[in-house]
Length: 130
Image: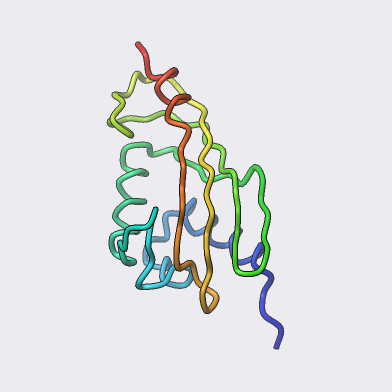
Protein backbone atom coordinates (compact mmCIF):
# COMPACT_ATOMS: atom_id res chain seq x y z
CA UNK A 1 0.00 0.00 0.00
CA UNK A 2 1.41 3.40 -0.99
CA UNK A 3 1.97 6.04 1.68
CA UNK A 4 -0.04 9.23 1.54
CA UNK A 5 1.93 12.14 0.07
CA UNK A 6 3.26 14.48 2.76
CA UNK A 7 1.19 17.42 1.48
CA UNK A 8 -1.97 15.42 2.11
CA UNK A 9 -0.87 14.46 5.61
CA UNK A 10 -0.04 18.09 6.38
CA UNK A 11 -3.38 19.37 5.07
CA UNK A 12 -5.18 16.81 7.27
CA UNK A 13 -3.06 18.04 10.21
CA UNK A 14 -4.20 21.63 9.56
CA UNK A 15 -7.79 20.42 9.38
CA UNK A 16 -7.31 18.73 12.76
CA UNK A 17 -6.06 22.03 14.21
CA UNK A 18 -8.87 24.06 12.66
CA UNK A 19 -11.46 21.63 14.00
CA UNK A 20 -9.79 21.76 17.45
CA UNK A 21 -9.56 17.95 17.54
CA UNK A 22 -6.81 18.00 20.15
CA UNK A 23 -7.29 14.33 21.03
CA UNK A 24 -6.34 13.44 17.43
CA UNK A 25 -3.00 15.32 17.43
CA UNK A 26 -1.13 12.07 18.10
CA UNK A 27 -2.16 10.91 14.63
CA UNK A 28 0.10 13.63 13.20
CA UNK A 29 2.59 14.57 15.94
CA UNK A 30 5.16 12.33 17.65
CA UNK A 31 5.27 11.95 21.43
CA UNK A 32 8.83 13.32 21.43
CA UNK A 33 8.17 16.39 19.24
CA UNK A 34 10.38 19.46 19.60
CA UNK A 35 9.49 23.09 18.92
CA UNK A 36 12.22 25.57 17.95
CA UNK A 37 14.88 23.18 19.22
CA UNK A 38 13.23 22.59 22.60
CA UNK A 39 11.76 19.19 23.46
CA UNK A 40 8.12 19.85 24.35
CA UNK A 41 6.50 16.46 23.82
CA UNK A 42 3.03 15.93 22.47
CA UNK A 43 1.42 17.24 25.68
CA UNK A 44 3.42 20.47 25.61
CA UNK A 45 2.75 20.96 21.91
CA UNK A 46 -0.96 20.47 22.47
CA UNK A 47 -0.92 22.91 25.40
CA UNK A 48 0.77 25.54 23.22
CA UNK A 49 -1.89 25.16 20.50
CA UNK A 50 -4.72 25.20 23.02
CA UNK A 51 -3.32 28.38 24.62
CA UNK A 52 -3.12 30.07 21.20
CA UNK A 53 -6.69 29.14 20.30
CA UNK A 54 -7.94 30.20 23.73
CA UNK A 55 -6.32 33.62 23.26
CA UNK A 56 -7.60 33.77 19.67
CA UNK A 57 -10.82 31.76 19.31
CA UNK A 58 -11.08 32.49 15.57
CA UNK A 59 -7.47 31.40 14.84
CA UNK A 60 -7.63 29.55 11.53
CA UNK A 61 -4.57 27.81 10.09
CA UNK A 62 -4.38 28.60 6.36
CA UNK A 63 -1.52 27.30 4.24
CA UNK A 64 -0.55 30.14 1.92
CA UNK A 65 2.64 28.58 0.54
CA UNK A 66 3.31 24.87 0.95
CA UNK A 67 6.39 22.96 -0.22
CA UNK A 68 7.49 19.45 0.60
CA UNK A 69 10.80 17.75 0.00
CA UNK A 70 11.71 14.39 1.43
CA UNK A 71 10.56 14.35 5.02
CA UNK A 72 10.30 18.16 5.34
CA UNK A 73 7.28 20.44 4.97
CA UNK A 74 7.86 24.19 4.58
CA UNK A 75 4.80 26.37 4.95
CA UNK A 76 3.82 30.00 5.24
CA UNK A 77 0.68 30.06 7.32
CA UNK A 78 -1.47 33.17 7.06
CA UNK A 79 -3.73 34.24 9.90
CA UNK A 80 -6.56 36.78 9.92
CA UNK A 81 -8.00 36.77 13.42
CA UNK A 82 -9.07 38.80 16.43
CA UNK A 83 -7.15 38.12 19.66
CA UNK A 84 -9.34 38.15 22.79
CA UNK A 85 -6.52 37.61 25.29
CA UNK A 86 -2.84 38.67 25.24
CA UNK A 87 -0.93 36.98 22.42
CA UNK A 88 2.86 36.98 22.03
CA UNK A 89 3.02 39.64 24.73
CA UNK A 90 0.61 41.99 22.97
CA UNK A 91 -2.68 43.07 24.48
CA UNK A 92 -5.78 42.60 22.36
CA UNK A 93 -7.37 45.73 20.90
CA UNK A 94 -10.57 44.13 19.62
CA UNK A 95 -9.34 44.67 16.05
CA UNK A 96 -8.68 41.97 13.50
CA UNK A 97 -5.01 41.41 12.73
CA UNK A 98 -3.26 39.69 9.83
CA UNK A 99 0.13 38.01 10.17
CA UNK A 100 2.25 35.17 8.85
CA UNK A 101 4.03 32.27 10.46
CA UNK A 102 6.86 30.56 8.58
CA UNK A 103 7.19 26.94 9.68
CA UNK A 104 9.41 24.00 8.82
CA UNK A 105 8.26 20.57 9.95
CA UNK A 106 10.50 17.52 9.96
CA UNK A 107 8.60 14.25 9.79
CA UNK A 108 9.87 10.93 11.12
CA UNK A 109 7.94 7.70 10.65
CA UNK A 110 5.05 9.66 9.13
CA UNK A 111 4.58 12.09 12.03
CA UNK A 112 5.85 15.55 12.93
CA UNK A 113 9.06 15.18 14.94
CA UNK A 114 10.36 18.76 14.91
CA UNK A 115 8.82 22.17 14.30
CA UNK A 116 10.86 25.30 13.55
CA UNK A 117 8.62 28.37 13.58
CA UNK A 118 9.00 32.12 13.13
CA UNK A 119 5.97 34.39 13.60
CA UNK A 120 5.93 37.87 12.09
CA UNK A 121 5.71 39.62 15.46
CA UNK A 122 6.42 43.01 13.87
CA UNK A 123 3.14 42.72 11.95
CA UNK A 124 1.33 41.73 15.16
CA UNK A 125 2.92 44.64 17.05
CA UNK A 126 2.04 47.18 14.36
CA UNK A 127 -1.60 46.09 14.44
CA UNK A 128 -1.82 45.82 18.24
CA UNK A 129 -1.51 49.52 18.90
CA UNK A 130 -4.73 51.04 20.27
